[in-house]
Image 1 (tube, rainbow, N blue to C red):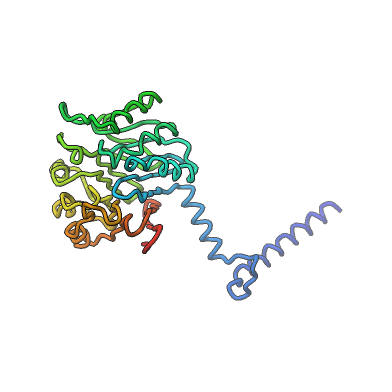
Image 2: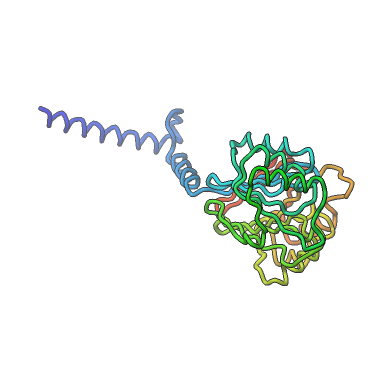
Length: 311
């Protein structure tokens, strides 16, 4: 008797499965609300597979005429710069809203207040695995209160501080971060910016800090491969950088500019925008688009904006 029941149960299960497959196959026509179609099932499977592989997430925060960029991949976090004095609480709130309780890496591209102003607040509230910066040549070390108080906060919390040229490269999950600049020593903060090349699968992203023409020239002459799909434009789109020779090597499809609405510097400058358009870059700006969110699965790049057009 037991064997007969098992036989009938198996037969019934097979029939139910066959009926379910038929219903799913024709659900485009039947429109049964609680049943998916094969297309949606495969879409979900592909999404789950992409999630399992891990994807790079980049947020260029709207912090006016300053810089603050968050990268996340497979549970690992990297913060590049932290806005101006007074931006710390806003940046900290954004991190907490995104469930971030620890920063694995922090890069201060350079010591100007519009890049490290909010860093002290972040350092006082969140654990930091490693703080990376470019050391200035002898005699050019910053002495501002913002810089000195930040160093004090890092020291009090025993955060490891590493020179960019010593770190050179590290992994952010499956994403590779390489510190390719500064490619020479400069006495001014902007050109001494840490330049990061991020590789996610087949795609590359280049983060320039406030690097200007001299730093770009040193990079192009260093022989490093500057080709990148995404360029975080240096110095808020100033006309002191993002030159034609540099752009010919980078050839970005997307250009990200962090700048303040109606700022007194005229960032981004019209000639810089013209050069970016000439190489075919799609431009996103925090003054027009608010916080810009970019995702990359290693092959495709998607950009969504707080306001304005998405790409």
